[in-house]
Structure formats: C-alpha cells, structure tokens
Length: 166
Image (cartoon, rainbow, N blue to C red; front, top):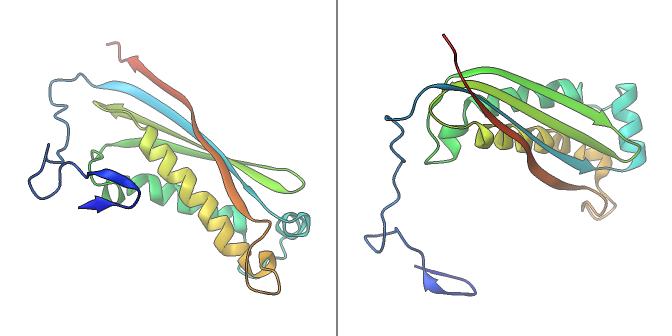
C-alpha cells in the first residue's frame, strides 16, 4: 500500500515488515498513572457569549462536552486499535473560557501497567469536537463554512507515574 506523497510502503500491512501488535505489558508492575492533556477551540466572540448565557439551541455545551470526554476516555481502546484496556480510576474535565476561545483540560488517573496519556488525549479531542458540534449553527458563515472555528494546541501537559507503597 502506498501513501500519497510517501515513496515507502506502509510497514506492517499485509505481511510486509513488522505486523501491528499490542505491546506485552504483563511483566510491568502496577503503578499509579496520571496524565493531563489540553487544547482549545477558537470560536466567534458571539458564540462564547451565547455559551456563557446558556442560549445555544442544543443545550448545555460544556456539560455535554464533559460527559463526552468521560465517555471517550472509557472507550479509548475501542477507537485506537493498539491501546490497552485499562482501569480508569478518575477523569477530571476543566474548561476555561476566553473571549474567543475555550481551553479544555482532561486529566486521567489509573492504577495499572501502562500510561493514560492516549486516554487523556482522546477525551480532550472528543470534548473539543463536541463543543464544535453543539455550536456549529452559530459558527457557520453564509456559505456554511467555519472560517473562524478551529481546534488547536492539543498536547500532553503532564504524564506521571508513582509506585504504590504498601
């Protein structure tokens, strides 16, 4: 299989190169793991004002985005094929509203053998996409496009692990 603009074939597909596989973590010890990811969605000032006043037709934008983030964290291995199914101990979702943007932060905690940064990133991404979905009717221009709306600055802010002491 060739990718557009890339001369090397994809490795791991149809018997060429290393086959995709889930990393064996069975020998690792259980430790407390925490990750936080953040990003923001740029919106029109008027859209942010409508969110603040609760006048978006679809309802509570940030409440819906928070629930969507939590659900996404719990379902990460269903979407990202080689992520391990892990026990999620807690998920915290925070929003900070600016004049023309909303910053979201998703923090995930687990006790297990592998990190939770992909779960935090997945939850964050879905939170921001949910905000976009809920405000798209007021973000569209007269052609149905979104010249001011964009999701940006998605990153892992923190990744920690702590040995559990008895």
